[in-house]
Length: 334
Image 1 (tube, rainbow, N blue to C red):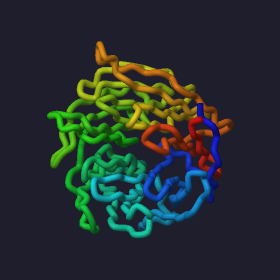
Image 2: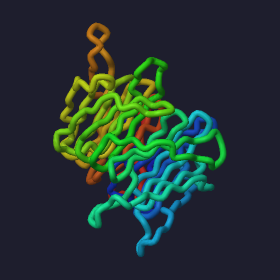
Image 3: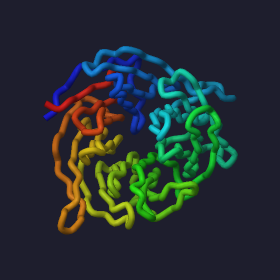
Image 4: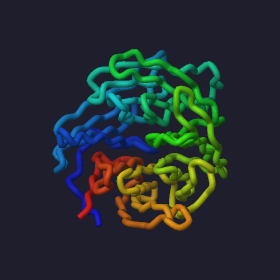
């Protein structure tokens, strides 16, 4: 069971974007950072365990040649081996900051040269893989940035071409040292998933075809891909083969966010139907088949949920944002 804890107030509501919540836990300081997108700005908040907001900061998308300020599409903390960077993706480019948002260390402008006049140019889908940060784009390409242990000498090292439609989300997990390990998955607006092996050069291992429905959110855990779709379903695939093991009719409307608690294999799913569900993933000892168990369902009444994240790696608390909801709602297990 989970109970509703003290909410954290926002200056404005969360934008109606999928995956519109990022969480960074700082156990050493007993703090949790939250990041939420609202139009052309991103709100960063720090909160103590009891939910008391301690600090707020607003970041804006870097201005370009346009008349109106560019909209931000996502904010996400990337935990790398030697540092943590905050990444903002927008309709203009990609901004990388020190983890508290105080200093911008890198700016990458998007090249709109291939776009037709009716195409929107944007970056979306952010994840860290080893010492790389991967960011998806409107064209279906994934930009791979090589991040040094310190300083601003960030380099665009590779562009991955596996998708033909805009990237929606990227998920990674630490490689366990095996050969040919699938440690990154990218999703797009057509529902196609591409499974990659990271390294000095990223290798495309397999494609999992879509079925005419977008895949707004994806997660990766111990070789299991969890994909949330626009029809409310969650599919669980074997990452190395792309085989479908489980199909869950999880929600009545489009899924807007997935998250994983890696220590315990709990999967969080949130959707536009106002519900947040928690599932337990495991493998059968006999067959190695993926198994799933429903653990909890929470209704965030009258709210189009657009972001949901666990606040710790054990899955004992989670936070939710919603369109037209001027607060972050927090829930913890009892």
